[in-house]
Length: 245
Image (cartoon, rainbow, N blue to C red; front, top):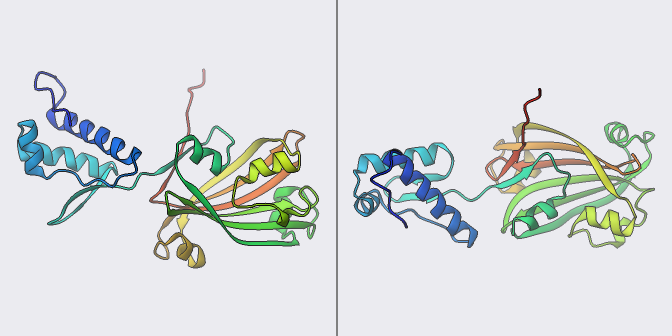
């Protein structure tokens, strides 16, 4: 690891925190778990006081980069999934862009009459046939989200004959000629409950991010209504803001 620059006007603790962030990024990009050197080792390596090292570690812990175990040491937090909200992309596309491993497990697939809220979202008559597809999405071997997709059966007949462990969006576009174009997404924070908490391997009531999305084809037809629950400790939504004139 490079050492801090004693001639720089940047405070030592800020330099050390940034060096450690880079080290954590590099280790996690290689899929490695990372335990940070001890306070004494960092102080000796950089020629600074333990108080300065502790200040840097406090900053990393506050920002969610590390966690500490008393008497054991400091460890990098498992890297989080990020999704940019300004782009319409499937979970598969998002993970592949980042080079992360994604595995999808089909929990259930059923054709059923559309419930009132599903019919409203998909602009269907209440009771119209829809597919309900529920899947567990695992990122780097860790459960990240439980997703339930509702699809008008008229738009994707015999959906059950397809491989539903890969990208659903790619399937809709290639098999059913549904060019996905726009989406409207709503996010809210809540606790994970019951079966979803079990599937995500978190405690009942643990923080989670709930997302609803309606996806439209280029023709303006509603193609998908999505309900997804993401682990709060594994997922971040990001948005780019532009100041208006």
